[in-house]
Image 1: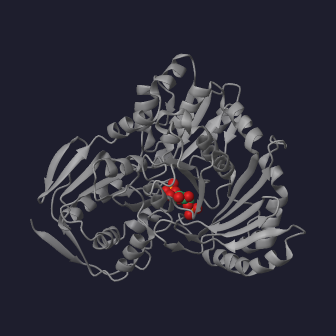
Image 2: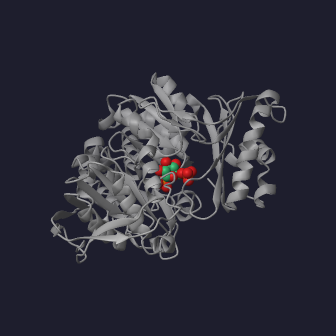
Length: 543
Ligand code: G16
């Protein structure tokens, strides 16, 4: 094998964000940009020689080019074997499962998740470790440090591998196995859920729509929902992954999955509606006339998980990201299990899951998952919901209302201000941070403030600390406002404002969310001077 060593110079902007390195496609297309990052990653992975690397992606534009680059570089950097999904496809949760199932050294997932694709869209590279989970900060920090001093990368000269057919190839002495991207994942889901009960529900006339948004979940959803569970053909819509996601924005929220939302609010609504994102780790759950917020969905899934065979022994604990509502906290309290509050980013759940301290995790950003993999898992959430519906023989709306009557309702909304000037956004956060001690001492607009801090997290498993994870202002009635800058945007900065208010079990649960939160929304703007500093009259996206 002849290894080619190529000279290069560092890029200064290869710091991974909340979930890997995400930039515009054109940015990744700069000469050596991909190679530098991949070499920096490999250089930060001691012990990789002879090991297995999993590679997959969400099928977005540029995936095919980068997969071939990574295969060549893996061969030159001493990996023994690469497992790659047919067509270059692996959903993020499926990649996590493949890494774990085949005891791989790690995996590279090529995705910018819910961000738009195509030549003018976004691209991303993420590394997952041998536990199947997103690399911990100590690895991403090392990759960034390496990227700042890199002088060369290694590759081999070889023709492109045919990813269209399942089979085994040799690349300069390294084995490349093109695998079925769906089969192992389907087998895993079958161990967790009562497929017979769900199939019986469909056979009895239950209807649903699953919108795969022309992203990676299509083949998985078709195989399971239509194939194994017997839902009628056409239940899965937009089921073929396209490099540009059909021109859409594969983010399963009420803005970008509006067609699904409108259908579910109409007289023609099926019994259940769901969607997933670009790389298949997010989910949207909507019943007839009932949108379920991701925070509520986490709480509901945790409260009902024991109805699915994979969770019949109960949960070890629940974890949620800090900005996620406290709805799950009330479930944990009632179940008598621990609730962990972590920073935003699925990587922070990894240690808790590995240590067996939590079974179910979730985030307000439409992510829920469990210890079956080390990523959030969109289809898993949909299947757990279906299992619960089949078991309880009730509709989504009825189940949600019963939940609120039992636990109370956390009215919750997130307001995003996208692509604001990065300096303005940083200044807003810095100035707000300096106001926090005053709020704690004097309250805000006549309200008593019981919490005002910049969230930091001490990992109970490995003792590591993450600081600067979001500004929290908590009031004595359980209401809360949180401010964060997104770590996944690719242009300017995205300011996220998370607003929450608790209404007890015997309170009023059917108010419009924005109306129920109106006073807190106004307070958020006033205290952070959002309109004045961003020049925006309204958020770009409200979820
Ligand atoms: C990623 C992370 C999630 C995080 C989300 C939003 O999701 O895996 O843990 O909640 O980004 O992060 P931010 O608020 O920093 O934009 P995904 O689906 O984009 O991989």
